Amino acid sequence: MNHNQPYKSGFVSIIGRPNVGKSTFINRVIGQKIAIMSDKPQTTRNKIQGVYTTNQSQTIFIDTPGIHKPKHKLGDFMMKVAQNTLKEVDLVLFMINAEEGYGRGDEFIIERLKQTNTPVFLIINKIDQIHPDELLPLIEQYKKLYPFKEIVPISALQGNNIDTLLQQIEDLLPEGPQYYPEDQVTDHPERFIITELIREKVLHLTREEIPHSIAVVMDTLERRENNAAIYVGATIIVERNSQKGIVIGKQGSMLKEVGKRARVDIEALLGSKVFLELWVKVQKDWRNKASQLRDYGFRE
Ligand code: GDP
Ligand code: MG
Ligand code: K
Image (cartoon, rainbow, N blue to C red; front, side, top):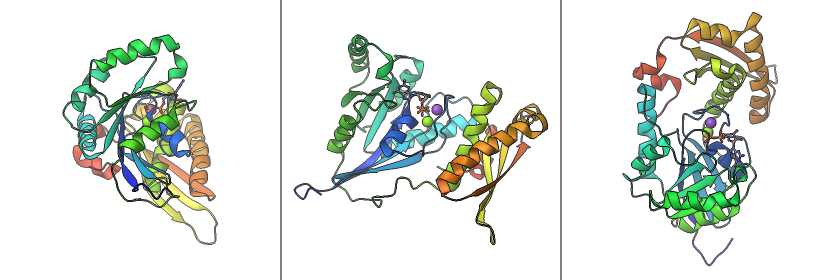
């Protein structure tokens, strides 16, 4: 503990187009699988907090839902959550993919950034994928679009420049308390992480056939007596009968594989043997039924 300086703490929101590496970054910093990584966009729908604690500071990271043009009610809802988050935090990390460069999605996000006074760092991720000569033009291009407080090139996957970034974040944080105990890396309910793990497995295994509109709802989470295992019961909600068929698979083979893989992760998360039971239910057009959003665990 450095006694010459007051303790610092604050909230940092990570935004950026889908797949730029937001979850990978949080996972690297926190060193544990909290945010769910996926090759498919929009895996992360709710806010997930990762807490990074040092002797001098505590940073609470918020992995926000992707800011993008809303296409339906769920999109509106996500946008509102994300926009509010931007105003409440101490710092925004706007992450881009060095490989992709500027695109329409960024234009939309920058418009949103202009509506807040929160300081913004531009994080250029995936620098392992480009030639060093390509970096400077990219920096020059983005400098013209917004007065970023810092521009930091990193590789979330390989770990390049992460320490520098963490130091720059700490420098900017205001004086504040240590909100969470040192050993706590997330305050998100385990239930949500479990349903996201299941959702992740469905999306991975079904490839493009199943859209992101699926939801997973936890029905039961309890330790059963005279049995050392934790019982987890959850329902996968799809929009069409054809999707139900795909998720269940031939003689239940797909659902079985989803369950097998999810169980491994849930056992690691809970540190216990887990008995996992999954159901699949069709609920048409659930995305547009705003009144149901709360039932599926979305929070404002
Ligand atoms: P998110 O949608 O922004 O949360 O993106 P993810 O963290 O889920 O990452 C999307 C994909 O990009 C995954 O396949 C990651 O492994 C990959 N990825 C993330 N960071 C890097 C990086 O620094 N370099 C490379 N090459 N790939 C990365
Ligand atoms: Mg993510
Ligand atoms: K993703």
